[in-house]
Amino acid sequence: DAKTTQPPSMDCAEGRAANLPCNHSTISGNEYVYWYRQIHSQGPQYIIHGLKNNETNEMASLIITEDRKSSTLILPHATLRDTAVYYCIVRVGSNAGNMLTFGGGTRLMVKP
Amino acid sequence: DVKVTQSSRYLVKRTGEKVFLECVQDMDHENMFWYRQDPGLGLRLIYFSYDVKMKEKGDIPEGYSVSREKKERFSLILESASTNQTSMYLCASSPFTGELFFGEGSRLTVL
Image 1: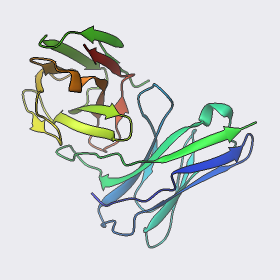
Image 2 (image 1 turned 135 degrees about the vertical axis):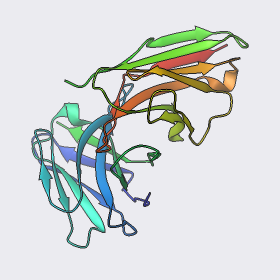
Image 3 (image 1 turned 180 degrees about the horizontal axis):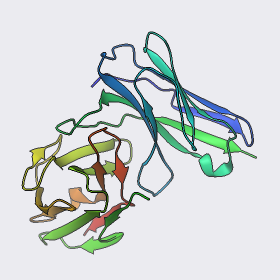
């Protein structure tokens, strides 16, 4: 799996968009970008994933650059409940045998 | 909604005891995983399974074993618990598209 680089922490004002970057310059053509988050003392929560097109769901949007070497997770209107550690992972999507490794992630603090 | 249920939220065991952690998913996923999470070390994969009765070692399998007798159930076993196995244990399941769905976690303390 390709290595990812994320800033260790970010702040965001409540109600504003939170833009979380991730670099994955060694990503392979068949690797997807996945985002998860973990709120304190809870299990990680799947947010969104994509291959090369931008994706949007009820939680967030994922913007992947054309060269696929970086991506941005966007929480359009951050709330205090979005305070969490956000993990960006790249891996081949299909089937297991793929071990998934979580790195350090970005600790997002949403402030009132 | 997707549901992964872990049998115990909190457990306290003594050194040398046998510990069973059970995980059940209701999504008919083929793939299931056990991780442990420790401060400063992130999530580390212990074992995973891509089919009934199949298992593969992850990064830190020593001291653990697993059982997958039914598709929906994946159990983690500590044959003889030790204090360095005090941790948060997380179970996850995954469809073929690769996204992981985690349970709430089981916090194990070994005294």
